[in-house]
Amino acid sequence: MSLFRTLLFTAALAGIGTGVVVAGIHMVGTAPLILKAEAYEEAGDAAPAAHTHDAAPHDDATTHEAGAGETAATAVAAHVHDDEGWEPANGFERNGLTFVFMALTGFGFALLLLAASELAGGLKDWRQGIVWGFAGFAVFTIAPQIGLPPELPAMPAADLMARQLWWIGTAAATATGLGLLVFGRSPLLAALGVAVIVVPHAIGAPQPPSYETPIPEALHHSFVVASTVASFVFWVLLGGLCGYLRPRFAAQASAPLAARPA
Amino acid sequence: MKTSHSPVAAASHESTASRAVQLTFVALLGVFVIGGVGFSHISAVHNASHDVRHANAFPCH
Image 1: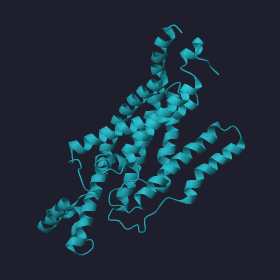
Image 2 (image 1 turned 45 degrees about the horizontal axis):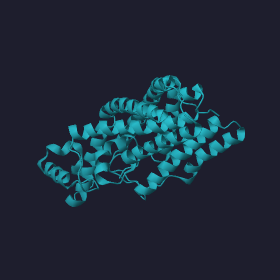
Image 3 (image 1 turned 90 degrees about the vertical axis):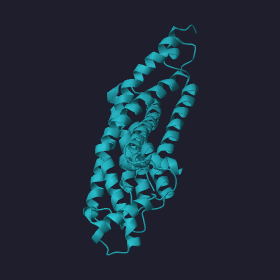
Image 4 (image 1 turned 90 degrees about the horizontal axis):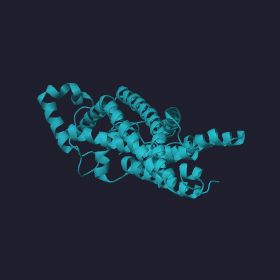
């Protein structure tokens, strides 16, 4: 049981620590951009109903005008975000959930990182952990984002299931490919590793039928940058913490075992 | 391979088979957690984790 417990405790602590820090980064980085995009989404939703001229009364700047204010109010009321059912209130509830889910994300990815690194003998220190963090960044951030860049609400996208499958397949292929490149000790396996990494992109990510969106390109670009930078910090911190904590928990777990008579 | 009788094996965790089982459980738990946070289609879970999904570039909507 001790290895499982060691990895579980390591993942929990590293995940919570990383999640809280990176959720803080998201509060100033991505979250304001998501809220901005939702304003465009709501304006876009209101547009067909109001049936006014394309661009005019739906910019941010028009909230002072009585007519536009009314339109915005109806839009907010009508905005159910594609799904029915409960959703968190803006502000504390919504941001609090971001902290909770970032911690869970950290925990989940830490479990995967630790399980994979155990196959290579287990993390020895924080520097080794950071190298595995880079691998996580490549597998779960860079590779899926080549085909499916981070997207804001109201952006056009292909069928959700198809994108999720492509995302998972690409991450799995990239992890396998990196493993072959780093641990396969022959040029042939290295070549195979490159091929496995390239294949999902040769197949191509599911794309939407139309790219028309109310979201300005500059806003989307800022979001891609903010999201990618936050993910980079996430993976370096998560890997580093896993590498730092894992030997310490392992020492604690094996000490009482060794003292026990066999 | 290590046997569970030697003190070395006791110090460096259990047998290979036991390691494999434990690592499988660790990986499965990771997949389960990430699946819930990033991929669940349950509406309430989607809405609760909405911003995290967008920020981490999980496919959303």
